[in-house]
Length: 335
Image 1 (cartoon, rainbow, N blue to C red):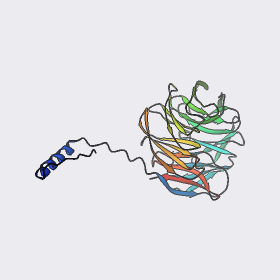
Image 2 (cartoon, rainbow, N blue to C red):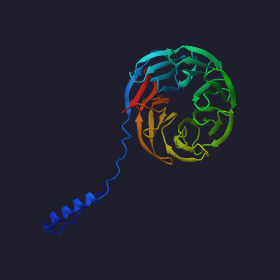
Image 3 (cartoon, rainbow, N blue to C red):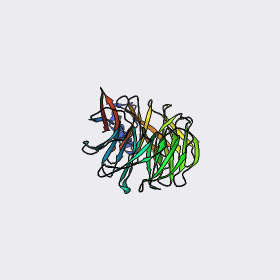
């Protein structure tokens, strides 16, 4: 609220002017209170036994489970109690986990064996291993086609798998090294080519690349999230910016500074917050003021190497993997 000051020339005018000042202040429109978007911090650490590398995490919102890649297996955590409830073994070089809720199946990209492991969401038991291109990494479920897309870093391709049958529907030649992807729910899948600084728009029914869009001034895009309602892509770039791209035209609308070595981006539709997790040990939080307007909210301290992340839309909490003093753990970030 703006400050109002008065120059009192005579002491007898003090009461009158003070009353007038109060009336003026009450007549002024109240300033808009900024949304209480900040205040995130690490609220809990979940220690997980065993050694090994890690990559993506994935939340099954309906089943209230968090899937965490961990070396040669996937750890499964209840996102409400934060207790470890199981694991999916024998996923060699696991990178990512995709959830197909209507089919009751999950899909794990196994980088070392160039396969995708299909598992039952209720029992966590493995159903089948499906061959893919070389070194599958990022993996997502496309609800428009009920297909799972595994992005193969070793062969610059994507393998499309029918979620219900587990059969390969086809392969998409990407022409570069893929990183993370997002599906718009209308029949298109978007993927970053980090080495080419491009975003690909893929027709998930035809299995063809429809558009190849440059991401400049964003260089080396490594993460992606999407605002489906407003048709905006959020690209986490290794050049220490997050780019906002129009998902229909490929236009880069704006960029905002973020931390170093970003590896995951998440969008909370309810709060309009965008989170970028950075390997330096921070999360850059950005607010979507409008489809084409964005502002930085805060920088949250996490831990070094905590660069992969998943969002639980129900609790608005974030989950990140890292290791501290040799102990593998999942960080819970919230308010």
